[in-house]
Image 1 (spheres, rainbow, N blue to C red):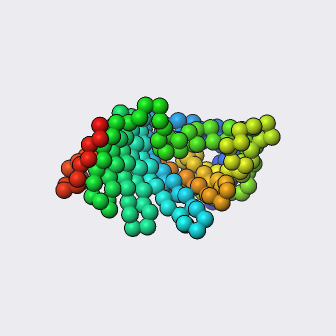
Image 2: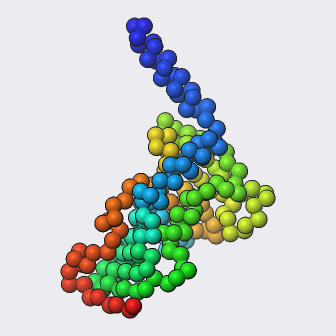
Image 3: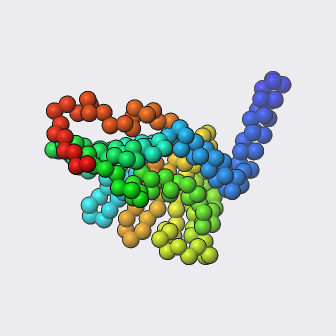
Amino acid sequence: MKRFFTLLLTALLASTALSAQTPEEIIARMDRETDRFDAEGFSMVMEIRLPILGAFATTVYTRGDKYKMVTAIKDESVINWSDGKTDWEYDASKNEVTIETHKAGTTSDAENNKKMIDGVTEGYDVRLKGQTDEVWQFRCTRSKDNTNKDDPKNIDLVVSKSTYLPVSIKTSAHGVTVTLRDFAVGIAEKDITFDPAQYPGAKITDKR
């Protein structure tokens, strides 16, 4: 019985320590965890919801300068790859692969999404809106001294208590809702490299 109460006390103390963390401490730990994205690569789902048109989702896999994006809209799907020098696009409806030289100075959706994750709370006042056993739920409100009108007024951020990775990042503007979710660390090189052997019979259009 004494051992039982000792274990119970240890669990309670650990729980108290966990809940005592400030939003700033939690966000700082999340930032440290997402720093692994560059070296190890990561994946996520970007969901966009539009008025009348509904929602569509893109699954993003990225590591360093390389990325792969799989977009599904209704019954159609398009896959994009890039290694920073060459871009590939596979249109499933046409069974066609188009190859182009990557335009210098342009940023991809994958790169823009990564920037949204980096320092997501910079320029925002953060408060803990709620929590469960698994996650913290934060509301980020644009600070009065944040003069960047392109920044959304509010961002809803959910962080995992077990991994400190973001679970979801959600914002809305002009009726359009964007949600980044299902984050995971660790992407193999082969998973983001275009392999023509996976698309036998596809028409190849090389525009380089």
